Length: 469
Image 1 (cartoon, one colour):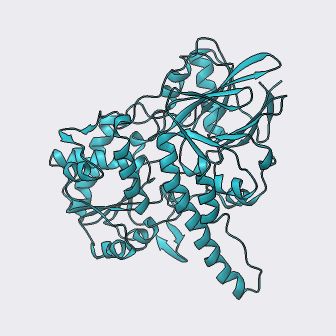
Image 2: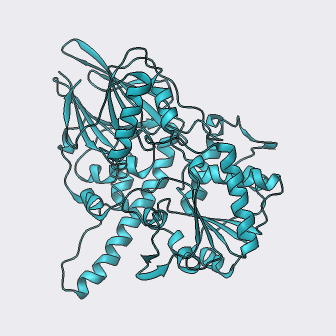
Image 3: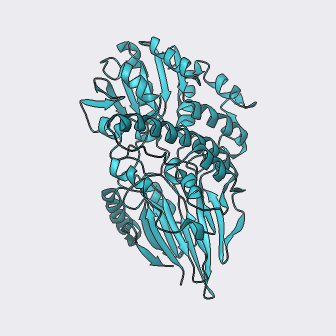
């Protein structure tokens, strides 16, 4: 009988990885994500894989975010040489993200080794290199939504729009073993139904086993229109206080939504700031890729009242005060603005990237406003700030957190509790349901809600669990 192993994003949000095996020897990995957050979890990225990478037939990737794709170069460096299946848009985005990630791994190792040399410790190797990432990128096989393909003998896969970010997919795997057919559905990350750019997650109706994300399994998001009004109020208050607005943001998905909302408010005359800085080379590149796949966007190839005509021209018309700052010199020049600026920079959980430099110059200022528009995993700097830390350590300094901190849950790219339950309710027969991609207490809340509202039993697997399909 076919088997499914839970290898990552089990009772935690990051590190997505699940292995499907058949009696005939077929082995397909669903996602190969990086662990992010607490140090002990991130150290798991350097551990060996729980399987022999050389024995895998294929990888199926749900979407490009690093917590789903980030260990693919390491997998290739460890001997995997098979196809990596994903949507066409994900294949484009993953190139942008993993080449950047490889550069970060190399720079981090170089920095770490300088300190280790002074302490007389042996050097470490980067988690993976740009060469590893480039080798991995040659293995990509793009697919359209709704296209069925054979990932391995007896395992046929179809990808459906998950509505989370551009190219994100729900993975349906039809597995045949001993003349028995079983359907596994992995939700990937399901999108928020109120996303301005993404379609609603595709409803599916048949599954024997269902893996469903539970990132926001404990609550619904704040009303969407109220969140837009809250953002407008924050911008006005920051203007009155004479400070800047900082927005740490994921380069793919969240940034594009934020630009949309800021443009919406700008068109209404409700953005008093002088300039919006997009201080993320990756986000700038992601905007270009979004333009290439504009037919997949829910806005039907236009921003309201603005025709898309190649790359960033539509965004510049929609939000004329937006300025992209791809170079380090342009990024540093932003610090001349003591007030009147909105800065969108990576990373989304404040764990690295250019947002840290803007924290250094602004976080200690009472007049600064910090907008947290997305989920912050345990152990991240963003989570510490949201949880009320009075000081934080960044760039080898301790900085006071005097800025006003705002969380905007209504802009999440993930489905909230009711949206998760609504999507699950489309399955006509009750599949064997397993909750993944969530912190344990959030899973338990969703588990109870599914029982109360649908009468469904939801299982919470343990890391390393293996079940029969």
